[in-house]
Image (cartoon, one colour):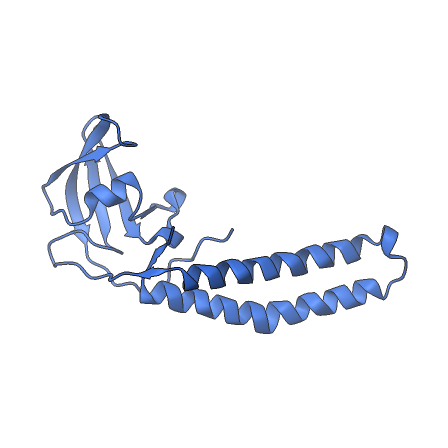
Length: 168
């Protein structure tokens, strides 16, 4: 399994890795040293908390390095009148008689609570490549069921890296 990432995604991840290695790691090691110097480790909550934070940072670094190493680099450009990555789209849900606005993003930036849907999600995958006015069927989990949406508006945007990456 790999994540589809753009060049900007990889750049942002590499920036986070560098920050965590040069800044956060140094602070975490110092916090562990200070807590250890306080004496008896068996009842030293600060020591265990500092160790936990240090290990959490190291785990995040390993995760991000693996993410970059196994990533499939994808292009974030699309035709002027088609839906592509980082485009903001207004879609009309036929069954609900509602219009929602979403931004199609790469897998590591998906956050449905903020209106950022992954290009790998059922809706994101179905919308890619369509134009304003298209009626799109969104299939759910390889079943015959699904729902229909109509593309109302496409706003072309360029990936500037401003969408934060998900933290795990």
